[in-house]
Image 1 (tube, rainbow, N blue to C red):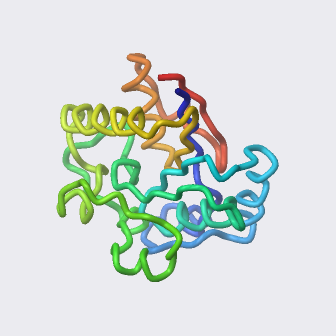
Image 2: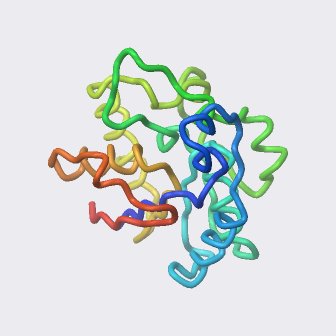
Amino acid sequence: MELVFIRHGQGYHTLNLPESLQLRDSPLTDQGIKQAISLRETFPLTNKDIIVISPIRRTLQTAFIWSKGMECKKIVNPLVSPRMFPQKTKWSTLPCDKMMDSKLIEKEFPDFTLEGNWSTELWSEGINTISEEGFSILGEKFIEWCKQQNTETIYIVSHDGTITSYRQLLSGQRLSRKDFPEETGWIKIKI
C-alpha cells in the first residue's frame, strides 16, 4: 500500500508572517486554488480512490477543488490535523491551526465523511500539541486504519508539520523543518 501525503494549497495564514498566523479559519488564496486545481493533473482521481483530509478549511478546500466531480471517498480525520514540528511542549495551538467544528464541516462539505471513531477531545484539540509518545501511539493507529481500507493508494491532504511527523514515524529518521513539503507538494510512502 502507498500513502501519498499532500500539503494543502497556499492559505491566507501564510501571506503576512508572523501576524497572519493569528487568522482563524484561513481559506485558500487565489494561488492556493490554482495549486489545488493543478493536483487534478498530478494525481487524477478515480471513484476507487480515498482522500483523507485534515479538519481545517484550507485542507478541506484543497481536497474539494481537487476532487470536484469525482465520486471518490473523502474522509475527514483529526489524526491528520495540524501538528507543530518540531514539538514544543510549552507552545499552544495557533489560531490558524484550530480545527473546524464538525457540524460546520458537515454543512459546508456534505460529500465528506467524518471518521468518527476518535475521542471528542481529539476532534476538538487534534494532534498539534500532543507529546511525541502520544503521537506515535495515535500515528500507528492511523496507519493501521489506512491498511484496513482495502485500497492500494490513500491520499492524505494535510500540513507540513503533520506530514513530516508521519514521515519521521514511518522512516525512523530524524527530520527537520528543512524537510517540509512546499504548498501542494507531496511525499509517497510505501507501508
